[in-house]
Length: 310
Image (cartoon, rainbow, N blue to C red; front, side):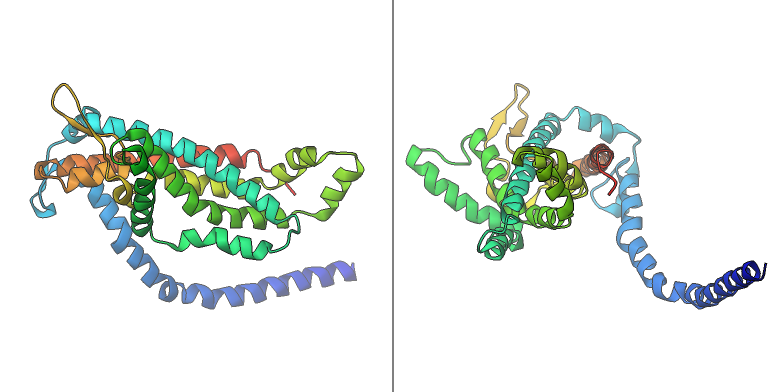
């Protein structure tokens, strides 16, 4: 009985001590979090809500916005350039996600096999991520055109070259970043699991498939999310490398930029010659946000369900 009383009194004392510590933290919470919350509301919250409202308006400047209902959204789904940009971006995101994650994982796996100069290789693979997208686009534009000129063509003249040029640029830039995440995931694995698999007679491929990959799923989830969202949001490399070229003309006279992705399509609509289309551009931006958010959440749910509890 005495032991039980001592434990109970100790628990009460500990709870009281925790409460005493928590009170001053709660007291100063507004002081520390207040500026951050205010900055978030000013920098993101208000512009986001305002942007949704403007997507239902016709305007040239935000001060002369006139509410017109869902007309902008109807025009968006009738816009051949937006529909082309959507499917082009979806294909680009799919191909880039697969290539980036497969190559990044293979490189990370190789660099964690106790090879000489592994740290040097990690640094070399990561460095392209430090170069800005616009600069990267212009550099690769010169490289591709220097090669393609020998075939009497250019990256701006054929859609297939523009597509694979963008794929090469995004892979070259992001594989090193994803590799670092995969390296951290692989190195966090317990050596006991690897040794147990070897003792049980598992081959190298079986160990990779049955032990390493399932236990690196948290890293795969992160890298899939980043590469997928980056693939859909790509803008600066698209602008610098192809600017949407080459062009095709529809029967109704509409000009479709065959390598234009969604972010660049929204930019061109907003800052194009037709200033009355800015409400339409804002509607595209809202739909773009919903699209990226929904696809990213589906991907997170799908990959997190495969994670192994360690």
